[in-house]
Image (cartoon, rainbow, N blue to C red; front, side, top):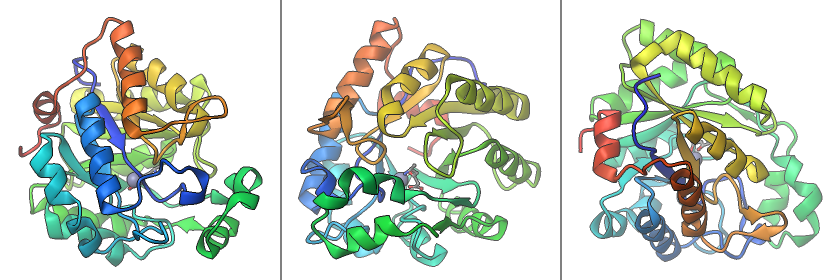
Length: 304
Ligand code: KMH
Ligand code: ZN
């Protein structure tokens, strides 16, 4: 892994996993997404990872028009690095998924490094009787979701976005995904510094045990040496423990309501900023410094 530096906080504002009935604090409208992103940046997030949603139903919406309703406002009000999803929702086609990044040419876009089962139904037990919209029940009941990210699809996203100067948050949900990324490095389709987001605790991906974290880290070290920047994302209750572990080992951290709607056991986070402040306390409590957006740009080789 590249030399430890300041800690990059990345905040994933709303995503496509949680649904509006689960938390009244999940940003859904363009105004809510804007305020949440600005609040996260003011609290210390150097990067904001963005999805869009339908303003009335809260369903994931990957149309460039939906992103256009908040992107200019976030850019105007913060210096945070804009990171657009190419994952969208696991039910979307690859062509739908790539359109926002292809249209807006952001500094960063997510790129998912392999196909996997995607167990959204794990949340039904807790929220089933609280779901207000039909689409939420259909979405969360589906036990057959495969999040498709074939080699051809990954290459398509790389080729579509790289020419725009967009670099990537490489999302790796298991060790095989690190090897897939190595394949693209060997092919010359990606180059360092790679920003590797290792994802823990999603049903269908690697678990969230400290041994899992260590295994991903060791594998990435062996495959990429000093050509990468490591970051972690722990789903749900794993968010803060895994962030603390990675920060202590020189990694970056991702928080945000996309990945967890919680701030403590049984306690909903009331904003993205609340999670950013919490992780910032952890980072600074370890005697580490949080990176500014420009420091993050420098560390990740972004176009600025
Ligand atoms: N929701 C995260 C676990 C993407 O946007 O490309 C994965 C994610 C996918 O952020
Ligand atoms: Zn995302």
